[in-house]
Structure formats: C-alpha cells, structure tokens
Image (cartoon, rainbow, N blue to C red; front, side, top):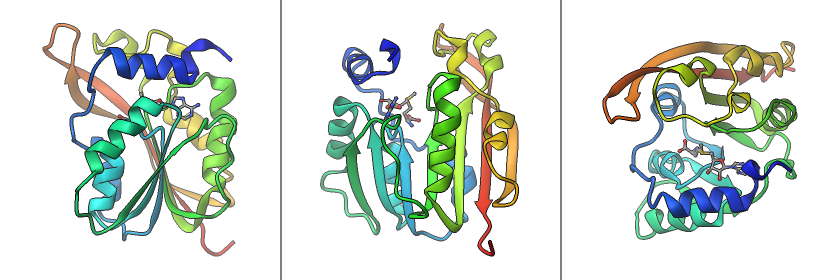
Amino acid sequence: MIRQFDEAYWNDRYGSHGHIWSGNPNPQLVAEVSALPAGTALDVGCGEGADAVWLAGRGWQVTGVDISSVALERAAGHAAGLELPGSLAWRQLDLLAWTPPEGAFDLVSAQFMQLPRADRGPLFARLAAAVAPGGTLLVVGHAPSDMDSGARRPHRAEVLFDAGEVVSALDPGLWQVLVAESRPRQSEGHGGGPVAVHDEVVRASRRADV
Ligand SMILES: C[S@@+](CC[C@H](N)C(=O)[O-])C[C@H]1O[C@@H](n2cnc3c(N)ncnc32)[C@H](O)[C@@H]1O
C-alpha cells in the first residue's frame, strides 16, 4: 500500500495538525441531506466526526468509519455528553479492506476521501451496494481544478476525482442520479485569504422498484 493512505499517515496528519475539528458539518452534506428523513447512515472517512454528529443531531442512526484511531478518539470525545435525538457508533476500519453490509443504510456519505483511482472505483461500488433501496448515496470530493486554486489541497492530483467518475461507477438501472456537478464555494488559501474552489458533488437515489 502507498504510505499516504495507511493508518500511520492519517494518525500522523491528525496528530501533527492538532485539532482540525471546526465543529461544522461539510456544506454539501447540509445542502443535500437536510431535506431527507432520518434513518440509518454510514459516514465513511468520518474523520473527527462533525458530519456524523450533525446527522445524529437530526435523528440519524450513524455509523462513522475511519482508518485513523486519532481521528476517531477525537470524534468520540466531541460527541461525549451530547444529547442527540439519533445515535452514533464509531468503527476503526480500512475501507479498502472492508465491505459494508449490503442494502443496510438509508444514507451513505463519503466526504473528501483521498484515494488513488484504482481504489476509488471498487470503493464507490461497495458504498453504492451498501445503500438500501430508496436510499441515498452522497459522494463529495475536492475538484481536480482546485490544485491550481491556491487552496490547501492534497499534494497528489491522482487522489482527486470529478463527479462524472462517481456517476460512471453507478448502474443506471439501479440508480437515479439527482445531482452530479462541480459546485463553487469559498475556501481559505495558503495565505489565509479567501479563494474560490469547487466541490465535486454526486447525490444519487437507489431505485426502490428494482
Ligand atoms: C480528507 S479527510 C476527510 C475527513 C472528513 N470526511 C471531513 O470531511 O472532514 C479523509 C479521511 O479519510 C480517512 N481515510 C483515509 N483512508 C482511509 C481508509 N482506507 N479507510 C478508512 N478511512 C480512511 C482519513 O483518516 C481521514 O479521516
């Protein structure tokens, strides 16, 4: 495995950066999920857990999965003592070696996974299979064009993908693609000032009738 993607790398990254936690859920999660009824949710690459906590705050029963023990300890720490209408469970797993249970989740959310292309396609397929009939798959990534934006981004362009790549992993007979776009927003550049970036956003609904 390339070192960039193992537990030691991510633990080191979380450890050396101190808290990355802003407490705020990712904007595309809020935009795409706020109108959905609560159910079971899988948040893959959940990091320090802001998305999972936000979902549980809206009544979702959330399983947050991450490879990093440091991130998950922080996630559990942030959630400790909160009285949430939903529930939270944290699992330390390598998504490249784990197949989630099929059809088990009303929502599967993957926000800013950074993996090489050869791993992404099979992972997207496993995540799609984990969505229950009638459920939602939400995949969000940094746009490849962000590499030139001045925003803080991974050093390797190969870990970025566009919405079309996610859509191509979905069987059109099983999925209705509701959103597939490169969505602009403002982020922070290296110097601290605002820069324009884009999120690649795919929201798809698994057909309930097939
Ligand atoms: C860029 S961070 C995004 C974290 C969070 N979703 C967010 O938006 O703040 C990517 C996350 O994926 C996790 N990750 C990377 N490779 C993984 C793998 N193979 N299995 C599980 N988690 C992984 C990392 O530990 C990290 O928390």
